[in-house]
Length: 77
Image (cartoon, rainbow, N blue to C red):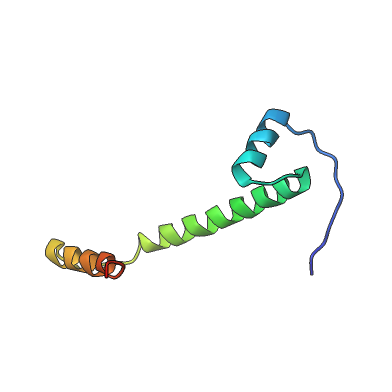
């Protein structure tokens, strides 16, 4: 369930204009919502990136290069 609330905030107009441009939004409401979604998305990505750094990999350099080549060669056909 989504709860909606009205609130009054003071916003830096220059920053709001830059955010609208960066996000491609037109209204203040859409800009704020897009900004909040982006913050949450980035946090999730950072959490995933941090978790990947903790996975122990027992690969030698040549094995790692082979894996990278496999991954990058899929798109070239």
